[in-house]
Length: 319
Image 1: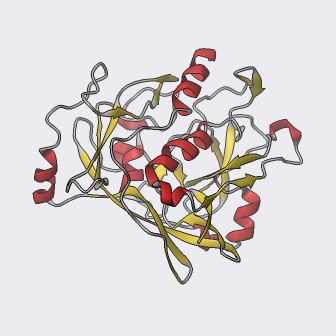
Image 2: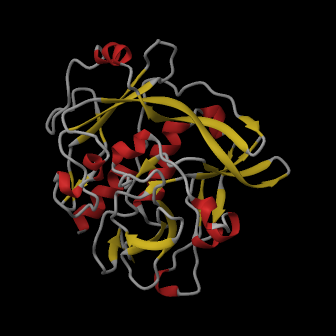
């Protein structure tokens, strides 16, 4: 387990480096919506465009040779493996990304401790196959306004943008996080928090965008000290169960759709349009479970190492 944690922390704290800047966007507000930043979202289905994009991929990655691709460093059987990869494309040479190509040689299991089989993966159930490139368009992110004070807005992505595990461990024991013992449902030390503030943050926002994002004091302490963690200061975060009741009092208002990209990452859909999404709050009756919203909008619990839960990032911006 110690090797797993050290590997996780090593790859999580290093932001992805890109050879070109993100798609140039300016923040725009319309009614209760904000359009800000970009992220790969919609699957390209035009055969003519796919043929054009295929010219950018002469060599495909393998577990031993990435061939210019980037590994997602996802887990199979509690170990990081090179089996799912991405590559960003500046199609029109305007110094901004237009597409993300995704390729995988094994299916991503819906729990990090499982083996890779189509029966253990929502990728397969969502219609995505191994050894095939899928292209997703970089598009402006649509955000819903949760709260407003002067020119400062708290906003959440309108759709599920990605799918990721909270922490890649199925253990019910406290885990050694570089000298700090904590459970898998500890948000402060979670993989998803690192991913939000490194990978997602650096993929979605150019520097001008980042200058508008405020660092937020995220309150994580609970009345039950057993699974409580320290408050954090983050650029990007997830909602808590208390904030769900504050901002989405009606269950119907919690329902949301997903991007194609999230489905390719292994989001649970099961033929239903609405999808599950992750909260930052631990489930206080089990140390390796967290709270999520199910497809009907109810707060339930799921294993911290579930890769099928959707991600709706939250940020505070000043316009």
